[in-house]
Image 1 (cartoon, rainbow, N blue to C red):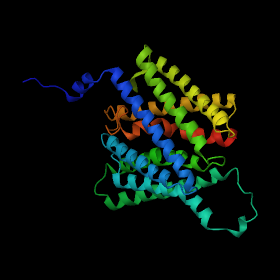
Image 2: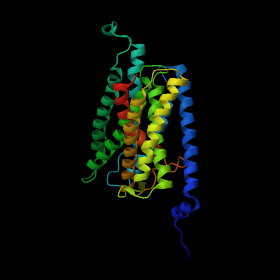
Image 3: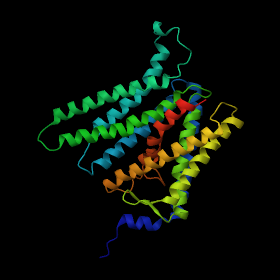
Image 4: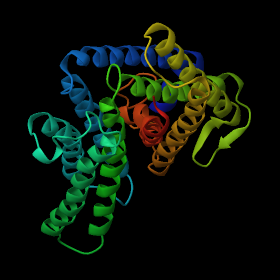
Length: 322
């Protein structure tokens, strides 16, 4: 009897060119859907309900995929605690903005119309929520404790999953409330275009010109040529967003050199995030987080570059944004 490996057969059926075209079509479709959601939400500011639903679906799915990955290791996080913790962090990201909208504190009545450090203050809510989730993880495992040897690993895996998806994901969410025309649409556009430009550019240039391995112990398919091409694509995407904002939308934006700096910094962080998720999958002996997104793998495979790039994008925009 001839036994075939289904994974090997599937790989043979899809050529690199086919995978690349599928990835590009899926990527552009997701970007188009994201832009539609952000533009539609402009009419519903500052509640942004469609942004909220997208955060629930994306971060919730990514958290479940990460739990599935880590279950292949000794960590074995608590799936219920991870999902509940990530959902709590998503709700916590909306809390300061809704409370500020509906609850008027007389001590703040004479403050400036917009506090430049408001985005930093808003992060206190998800941070405090994360602290509660950490404490809850200990309590949950104490209730379920039966025998020595696994509890500490489960707690560590649970906290890792919540912080990786929920805490880093909070920086993506909070970009929506930056002050300016169209609220935070512009910084989100810079983040997504630069990160996914670097991600897609690295994949494309690696497929076409890759010769020298970048970090084979973590990801055997990534190459130096792909990384350099991805960095260039990230910078190009950042400059294109700046040009659209300046000449089409006629709104304040990053100047040209600041846009280049954003592309270099965030594009590098995006590729590092992709490598770090590759390390997770490598350690779990899995190729993809799941097969839910054609051409990419899973939702976590789509978000990996954004999760690492978002904190740097947040700080960069807070410091040098218009």
